[in-house]
Length: 284
Length: 189
Image (tube, chains in turn blue, orange):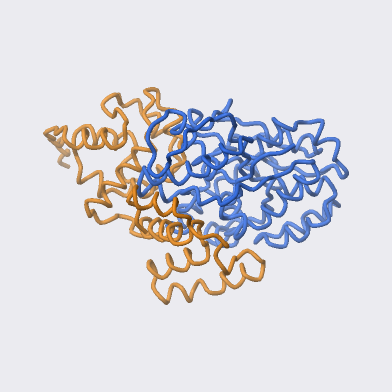
């Protein structure tokens, strides 16, 4: 299956293991990720704070490129996904966008990668590649804000209780826990600007995941992953609790279940140790 | 103990009209149901809860709104937007308030936030794609000075060791079109 691929800036940097695992898993599943030629930054969380026109136009340029190719676009980052969806709605409305002259055809869907894997490939295709079931793993799935919100932009069927990541991990044999915080906020860029506030949000997620009986958290966004992974020592020190919770990208666990040889390399890039956790579980 | 007498506010619609024109949102339809405030995960760090921010805009309390912590603490999580029964895009309204505050020279109550966004947009403009290392270094330098940058050094080195730092920017130069978008939309770093 061919699909246009918009990796976003983080996947070649701070979320390198996400980019590596996305490509490995897609290859196993027979998906050809065709990176959009000449893509630019989607504007992320900063353009829309600064200038509405800029925020829409930067993202729209990427869809203009995708529209000429005509394939659906798979997006691994929640922030990029959100901005591209905002631009998609603007392009479809036919309103004028700075620097964009192309007449948008719009015969394509923009999808977050987790939804693409579940809705466009589905259970059978994923099950067919399963080599090592994720037995004994008790994750909660953490979607964060922008994969589903607001549904008027994302077209999410169930913005407050999404299922695709849960379904993928259930298919791979994990004992997925249900919880009420799957779409709560991790603080986003506040981790840099107002870290004390972001740490409180993240701590709440840890507490709720543990209350649900989870032993790890699975994410589908570079920012969410970073915020949950980066600062567990500091949050432990400040709160007096002890947090040592492995945070995975969902594609890392897919790779693990597919028997990919690079899993340990991906996990070595995490701040919170995930390798010994999986070794204890007999999964690595 | 003397009871606090209620504050008397003379409503002024000019600020509401300015915000409505820029955001495209009909602020006047807010009837104070407080769903936005009840779902807001950042409420604990705000000085003006979201529903009162709506009321402040309706009443024309411009200085109070634009000098608030709230507009900078909001993380754009879109929960309020998703739940508003009147379909007001409240998260977008927060963007509009931040934009007006910056344009009209209000001093940000949480000054690191606009410094971060400015470093981020600057990097986008220079490279077409964000160069995370440069952006983070510039943000730290501008917000916490050289001392702050030195304090972050070990964390940066650790990330470098883990292969999470892209030293060079992407081999991509902002095309003519990306440059023209910045020019036409007037985005500055």
